[in-house]
Length: 72
Image (cartoon, rainbow, N blue to C red; front, side):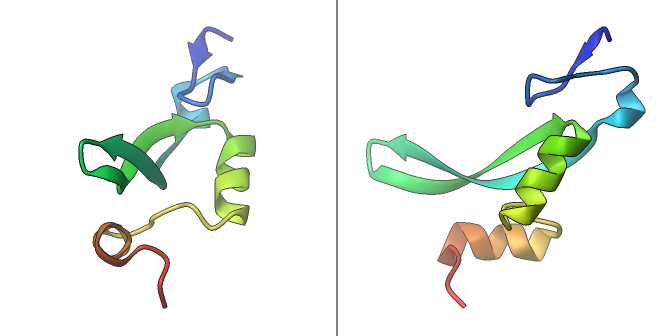
């Protein structure tokens, strides 16, 4: 288990990691702002992000998150 994902968990092979774009927040001189984190995570963490609705699957979803947040 020599490969550590962005989530901090170890995997046997790079193919065991999931590349994801997730909803995130950051603080700037303008206050809290929406941002996107790009990471490679293990399957368990991928399922957690998915269950919580925090994965952005498309460019359109990323743009909507940055502009509008979770508003419907």
